[in-house]
Image 1: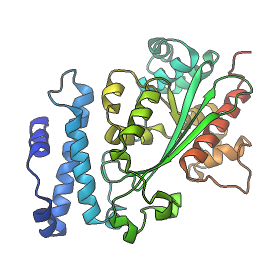
Image 2: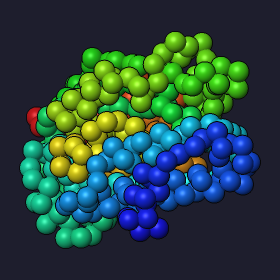
Image 3: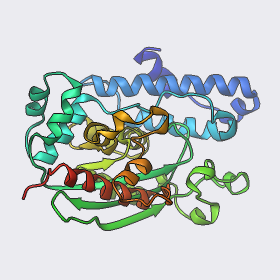
Image 4: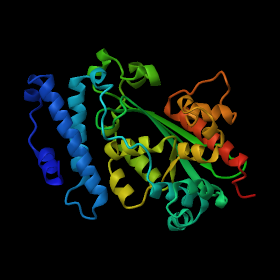
Length: 322
């Protein structure tokens, strides 16, 4: 699907009732077309200076696809691979995150690494850290942001200095369409969020006040998340104005999982199947989570654990200004 075809699909009149009445095969075909168009338009938006369309077109199509996936059923889609979730941040993103934490320019970091991804590990420790980061974590109903909903957002801040503690914690729960009252909250076996915890709460896409606040914070402070490509992918298709600000270079994303993989030498020696870079396992090695404790999989709890673990890693490597 090219950009013109994707735009034609996105702007076509939609008749949901007719589609739903056509049966599972028709709905699957429409979902596949929606998701292909979303991917094509998203890639074009970020790649082209003047793509010729507003990103709101992409958000509206993602909203439409989400409603379609509600009808298909999340259980049936749980093991169906999608394309809207990025696997990792780009090299440019990693360099920008390092540069911001060290108070220098991203091009200097890229020049230092000379295109060698393995050199980022050296770049992290080449200069002392400074400033402040915003930690954030979300819980969702799906892996893929063009299919599911954001249920829970937690964030707080931490200064990059010796002895720092996370501060100003905030947490928000977000609602779901009414149909999930009877069906149950998707992926509750992972995040343990029940309907009672979100009953009466406004869905994230409808909560414009929360969106405005998050966008303001993200364009003011660099934000850090564990496997940040997940949060970045979700905010791109759920947070109004995020894609535009990201494209303009107004948002800096830092991946604490990348920090773990590059700074914690134990990661390379442990079996890959043991997920050594998972937050829970990293936190146990750094003493921020007891051996008999588990990651909560709630936004604020995981944000706090991440920031404390990152701080412990940075302290162990003597990365703060004295």
